[in-house]
Length: 279
Image (cartoon, rainbow, N blue to C red; front, side):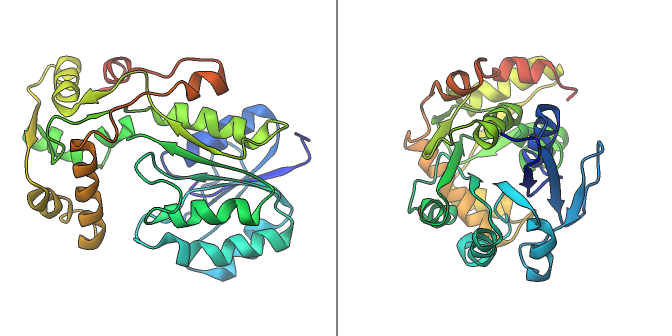
C-alpha cells in the first residue's frame, strides 16, 4: 500500500477504532481518525464525523482510498444510516472498505448483516470482520463490568453456552492487515480467541485475577433485557438479550484459526487478558 494513501477510521475513539488507528499509524499509511468527538490523539489527523449528519461526510472522505467502518451502535437498522455514506464514499473514490460486524450476524442477517450484503456490491476491495464477543465487554463502563465491580456477578441468559471471546487488539491487528495488504480479503472473516468459554469459566478467571468473588448469574432473556435496558435503549437491549439465546443454543461455541493465519501471531487468551488488568 502506498504511504500516500489515506485510510479513514470511523469510530476512532471506540474500542477497536482507536486500536486500528494506532496500528495503521505504525505501518505508515496516512490515517484520518473520525468520530463525533474528533479524537486528535497520538498525532493522527482527526475529523468530526457523525453517521447522522451528512454534512460531516465530505471532509471525512476527502482523499480517502480505504476505510474502516464501525457501524452506529444506537440503532437496530444500521443500513438505513450507513448506505448514504457508503454511496458517497464510492463517488469520492474509496476503493476498499473493511466493515466491523459480528460472528452472530451472518451476511443478510439482521442489523449490520444487511450492510454486509451491500459491501461487495459497492466496493471492488472489501472485508467483513465478524469477531466473537469482545473480552473488553468485561471492562470499563460496559454493563458486565459495572455489575462485576458493584455486585460481584456477570448476568447473562446464555446458560451453559460457550463463546470464543476475543481481545479487541487482535481484531485491530486483522483489520490493519485487511486495510493495508496488497490483496483485499474479499470475504468475511470470523474472528475468535484461542478457546471457547462459558460465562462460568469467565467469572472464575476474573475472580482469580481480581482476588474478589465473581460469579455467573444465569437468568431468563426477559430479565436480561430489563437489566441491559438500564444502560441503553430498550429495543437495543432486547436485541442483545436475544443474542444470549443464540449463545445458549451453541452457535458461538467455536474457535477459528483466522487471527493467526492473517497476523502470524496466536490470539490472546482470556486468562492472559484477565491477568493483565486491574479489576
